[in-house]
Image: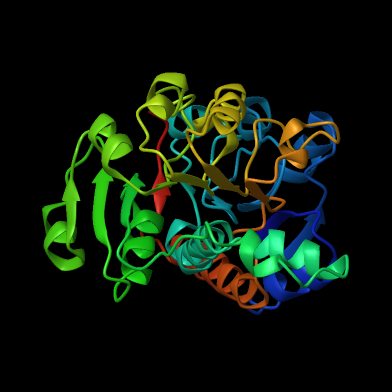
Length: 321
């Protein structure tokens, strides 16, 4: 009987949505990712599979999982997992990029529209009783239609964003260390350098994993390259953008506005200046969440476990750079 150590602290609704997809005969033990390493070690010691959501998974814990055949993440990001240790032990680590791409892409586009159309500003004023003059306050609202959109990172989520923008008459650019000729033809995206992307885009949307090469990828120099009126959207990981430089840039008008779902420190500190900036739309790292996506995550996770149990290679494996 396969044993699964399932680490999740998102509540019973999410837990049930995922564990309902466990094949008959699977022994699933619920665990808290916020527990100490000692407690985690006890949970994973005899587990065939580790399903993980939330918090760090250290090399020490991974080394103690002597029977583990797969570490299945329920997220796209894997920066809090010691993938290098798992690789050394030949334990595959797989993420959810192929599963939550649609959800994250929708949220990225929603942030674009919320920022461009001044949705949150209008909503806040309406709730305070305003009406007369409100339309004039939004005379500087912009349109997504016809905008040049620069996608930083054309992995699964970046490509899904490009797909979702089909029909908006956008010029699509992308910057990535890898060229994707097939995607360029299929999606009508043009490969450029990061500097070119920052200069030419009306909207810059970030979709790269967090690692040593992407930490602070968008900093003071890159933000200064942005054209007047351009906006920045980040649904990847907070540290991919230099947050201090971003706040300075927002005050100076480069970028003119931002839509942010991720932050350098999470939860976002209560006294963060971002909370008071009218040219910023904030959401609490929920781009990958929806009622539907939890079911997709659960199915993919246990299907992947079953693949490995049957001796097949897992899907969506990631590696440390």
